[in-house]
Length: 300
Length: 146
Image (tube, rainbow over all chains, first blue to last red):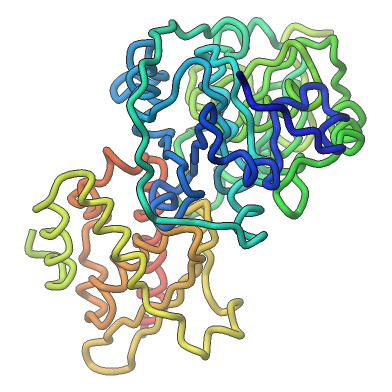
C-alpha cells in the first residue's frame, strides 16, 4: 500500500500535491518499507560527502544517459538500474538533490519516461534538509536487490525532439536559461571558453523564464499564486497550451516541466532535451537574438 | 609528457594507476585537502576571479612572486557542497602551486584528459577544469608581463 500523501497546506493548492513531500514528512516516513529515497545531484561526488540515511544515489551522467548514443537508457538498462538500487515498480520513490532540486527534477522526469507510477520530489531538496540540521551519513545503504520489470520508455508525451520543435514554432515555448544565454551575449565574450554551441540566442518565439525563479530562497517551490503570476501572468501561458520547455541540455527545463505539469496542472508540457546544445549547433534552424522573443519565420 | 611539473605528473600517474570508481575516490580525497583561503582574501573576495564555467561558485586568485623564477601562488575558494569543483581546484593547487611561471604556462590545455575522469564526470563539467587552467594561465601572463 502506498504511503499516505503529505497533506501540507501549501501543497494542497498545487494541481498534483501527491508529487511533493516535506522534509518533516520524509523524516517520519524514511523507514517505511515501500519507500526508497533517491539522491540525484549535479555534483557527482556530493552524495559521497554525506546523504540522507538510507538514500541511494542515481547519477544522471553515468546511470540515466546511454553511454554511447545521446539518449537515455532503454527499458532493460533502466530495469537493471532500478533492481540494483532496490526499487520495485510499486515503490514510492522520493527524489532530492542539490541546487533547488535541479537534477532531482531531471531524474524524476526520466523516471516518468518509464512511467514509474509513484515518484515524488522532496520540497527544498538537499539544502533544506541540511539547513534543518537533519541527519546525514556517509554510510552506504544496504538495500536488497529487487526485480523491476522491463518497461519500454515512452517519449511521446513529455519529450520533444528537434523536428517536433521546428513544427511547434509559433506555439508556446519557454527558455529557462539565464538572461545572458537567452539573448545570445554569453557566447560572444572574448577568451572565455563556453559549453558547446556555435551560435547564441534562443528559439524564435520563446519566452524567457529562468528556471530558478520557481524556487524560493530556501529552495522550496514558490506557492501556487506566485507561480501563476510568473508563468501565466508574465510568460502568458495557459493550461490549454501545448508547451515545450528547453535549456542547454534539458536538465534545468525538467525543473520547469515539473512546475508546469505537477504544480500548475498543465496537461501538455514536453521537455526538449536536445535543447540549446542541439539547436545552437544545427545548420539552418531559425534563431532569435536579443531580449525579445523574436519573429517566428512564416508568421505574419 | 615531460612538460608537466613534477607534482602534477605524480597526480596524473596516481589517477592513471586506478580504475574509474577509485578515481572518484581520489578526487573526493583531494576535495577535502583543498587548502583554506588565506585571511587576506577572506574579506576581499572581489580581488578574486570567478570561474563561471564551473557552474558552481569557484573563485581563484593568482600571485606571481617577483623572484627570478617568477613562482606562481594559487588560491581557491569553493563551497563544501561543490566537492567536484573543489577536487579540480585541489588538483591545480597540489600540482601547480609554487611552480615557476614558465612551467605553469607550459602545461598542455588538455592535460586533464589523462586523469581519465570523462567516464565518471560529464564532459561538460570537465570543461570547468579546462576553464580553470586557461584563467590561471591568463592571470600568470598578465602578472608576469614586464
